Length: 478
Image (cartoon, rainbow, N blue to C red; front, side, top):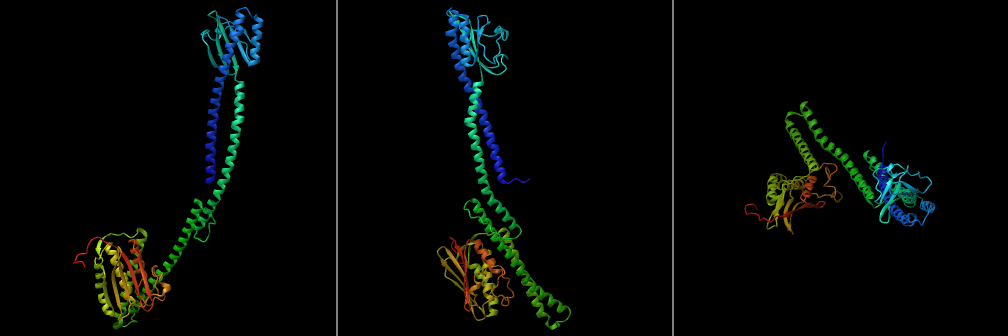
């Protein structure tokens, strides 16, 4: 049987309150009984001395007869609801009061206790040597007559009055406390149910999310922690929905990007194998197969790199380096390609000091990606400009081309994985749609920014920032 949080909270509070209540009852009962017994003992002790001085002393002096003494004892007994024993100097019970429910005293006190002391006052709570069936308060006061021990007055009082007072305490204190406890638990139940309703709703919606249904709404409008939790889960569902869409797009894109070169490779290879393509033209188609293979290899490497970024983050080795070095290295690498396409590659350095902080290998990859992207879309006879400028504590690196530009509706999508502005994929058959995604991931990992400005039929300019270094570039480096 499952127990809800409310059940556990309710039972926990119930057990805690009951334990506390029982402890309070036990302590207060014992404490009140002890206080009442002490007070009653003091009253009985005073009465014992009063009886000794007025009645017993008068009897010993001859002022009172034995009947007068008995009448006095009976009066005190009925008034105080006590049993009174008068002992002589030998422990013999010389007189006693008759009280309802009280047993007759022994003939001699030494019959029940041979070591009973007749000269010392004391009080005792118990059955008085098993003389009484119930507990009584016993007070013993010695009788002094002409400075000589002449016996003892012993008064026994039952605890019925004390028990009655304790019952009144229970009625006055404990019953209202129990009523308050019941009301408190009723309020606790109402509050807990109010809390549990949104929690149950969250659990139900979360189960829907687990099945892939991210359209279910929480419908929880509170501003407390539960409302914040519901908002967080709704945001999580929204992100999971986007991730699900991305997964579907990813599978679609990767299938397309792998299917096209594989189809070309398979088709041309089979044509060469069965002799459809004559030997004098096989070299051309073998080159196509090699290019498609390179494209697959590039796509696979890019996917592995992005997957590594997603799983472990981008591992950066931050150090000071001269940004001009990877820029010039990239220009040398693409110099031959630019000459073949008739593209001018121009460097503009407006910085006095080109030392920056960053991961040189990763930044070099960014420059290669941006320059490769610019070369693909720049026609013959046009130029590509690599420009370095200073802005406050940053160095800005821009790659500007005079190509076809990017449509305005595509500018926000170019950072998306597999996205290509040409939906037909005809303009860039060697592209994977991952280069700009990798570039942006690297720049963001440096806590820097990358932006693009583009106009159709005019060209595009990609600009990213890097933090300046305090070191000075050497003459050999620049």
